[in-house]
Length: 136
Length: 222
Image (cartoon, rainbow over all chains, first blue to last red; front, top):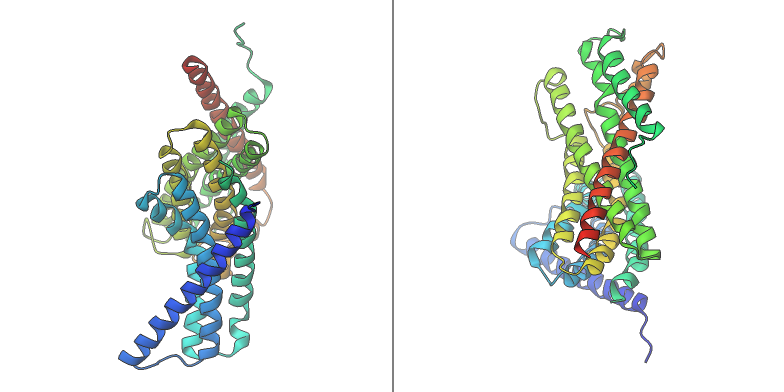
């Protein structure tokens, strides 16, 4: 059977995004039960969650593929991925702060567009670069 | 045959860097409050970052070349331009830090631009660490090229895009005036542009020396 590396990376990114969304929803429910729910705009918060999950999972999937090639070194994974996710983290922090404060959608539009652009960039890079990792 | 001829662009580099140091410290600069004489840092600090960005761009181009055509020479160029880029980035951090001491009153604040610069350095230090963890030469070169290609757009977004979208003290970011607003009579451009060209050429020169050293070591090993 023929195997396309692109199919593998896309499948892994979809699976990981789903996993991250489920995990963060579980975290959200737990926190809401133990503390009070302070989030003013739930819809915005969930959009932020989904966008963040896609971005994180596409970065981490490619970085873990790189780390796996380097002998599955756990510290290497952390060293590589922490600087790489910071732009994503900064945007997500701003967006979720807006959601918690319950600002209107128009004030978070910039962050949403930027997150979308960054996610597109990360997904495209992972899609293009993964076949080169796979080839050996 | 021993090649002892110095290329013309190396003479140009020497001339430009000497001109930058002499003219940068002696020519007239606009008198501005707070900034005063520290505005001269524009001739040294800003070209460091331009040089780093150009070198890292060259590094990415060589990484693409390596992925298209796996020759060890392309990998040597990719890693050595990244090394020189890191070196110029550290110089940029030091010159910026000294400038901040005299204008903001502290060597380091948790400003978005400053943190972004530090994280940008970390991205490339991780590149060097990643390369160090491979035994096989071709594996190291290919995986390194993949990481380099993935890291460069993120580096650009974190160092040039994100700080512009947030509140930052740094000139040119967060709505602060940049060099073009300070420089009303364009006198500073006469030193600034040669400085940028000079430091970029100096970076290319460093890199070419390091690549030649690597090639010699590689040929001795073979």
